[in-house]
Image (cartoon, rainbow, N blue to C red; front, side, top):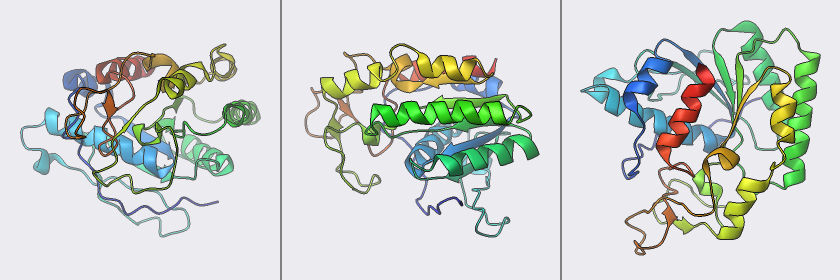
Length: 261
């Protein structure tokens, strides 16, 4: 199973009105090697946020950009894709379809056994059935049992990209500017309640994994990013184009920093 190629350019989230604590981000991640394993939308989402941090951390973002390798097992291992990354932070991205858990586990094993660094597994698809997500967590827990020597601090981070938070999920180009959609209360509640009893968290934490669930940990039934530009400024909209997180960005940053401590 290989990674899917993605030629999308990096989208700098310039319209996001919520900003991370750049100094805290720098202190936590400086010198780290980060491995992101997930689907293309969630990794693009992460690249955007990393670019934003780079822009805030350095006086001249263009001079500070680094080239991070985007892993494609079926292609030349020397294939490189330009990606913004914070200063002195290594970054590798591996894309898989949302349902391709076998590919995710294969990549996780490869990176954790052969390379140093923190592995973050991404899952952005909020439209997946809750049962399927539970089964994925169970399979991941079983995989951890079968590979006790895999390098953990592997960080398993279940996140949801804003582009998936629509009432009706349809195919579209997430890089186009017209896709600004409200998030309904029912969908917001679904994000919060998918693992309300903490079963998935417990299964993974018992095996040494550290978990941040974006839906449970940062989303409640009342807040969404106000986005100016959709023509309905007074309504809570998510900026799907630039991948604002589904909760206050400072809160995401604080929780992520906690995982690395």
